Length: 466
Ligand code: CA
Image (cartoon, rainbow, N blue to C red):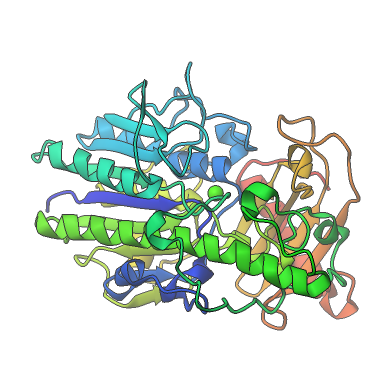
């Protein structure tokens, strides 16, 4: 059988709970939903470090940050590092391209490496009239970034060598902060308010101090660039928080709407070219995001809204339409899975496994029942103030250790903070509001999960700090 094409569409900070197919209560995404209707929805797909740059490095290498060198936002991926998915595919006769957000460094050895074609935003890039770097040459493009990335992606598809299979990574900037919508959607949601999440007014009681220490509160930490207008002077307390939430979430969702349009245009393009069914189409995001959940915007924490990645995959040759899976899949698995589909062996240095059987509806023997997570960027280089932590999540429990130390890594804050543990019973407390670590009833669970955490650190060759 012909080797399939791969269209990997990834947005930036798009939480699963802002996607119709994941049961969104706050917006509609008909085009992204089409991938769920015609393919599979993963219910438990997780990133292993909930922040942009490290997640992107993990997706390309299949490795955790301590092996690929990308721990924090200020680290860069060395183009000479192996393995990288695009190099392996390229060596095997695939045409490879990346268009849009790169965010893994520029110049020297940090530009995209091993892609036949690349055209990327410098750093975070701009929403309007963005500069892009095409194979080392900078050019300013007029228009809205999500539409430009979509069109440049289709331009590349149009001129590709149709005798070879391709992998195109279409990486959107949206809906990343500062959430600037396109003209087309700037009035969307003007007529009505967006429902508030039930934890918008969280007081962080019954949690480790890390939760209350974090500086990413909708009620307090959004800046004037985020807000784009001054809050009404008469508002205070919860009334002000409610206003700030609407201001934030509406712009976020307006940005999502353009991403949804992009997915529709790309699917239609493949369909018109008669290559849709021979192309594996994936939609995901580099991590989740707090949409006012726990009173926050941003990500970083191992908590559910931030940890969970949306992941939808369409490939009718192997994947049943309208299917879903609860298996734990991690972003380290993406590269191994793509290699498997391309009929290539999986690089032994990769720290993920192929999920191809999971996607086919199978129940692979020995599939993981826990995942290992590590957030290194202690205190976030003096913003966000999220403490360094690692942890393990199973299908029903989550154990977290805040070792709260930057360990001298670039991009971390100097001050060591309070070291503490959290345990959440996700069946009883899916919103993670009550830390039961010191609850006697959970003594055995703490013991088992601590052992599991240590086992995973050995397996992935990471070093414990507890
Ligand atoms: Ca991100």
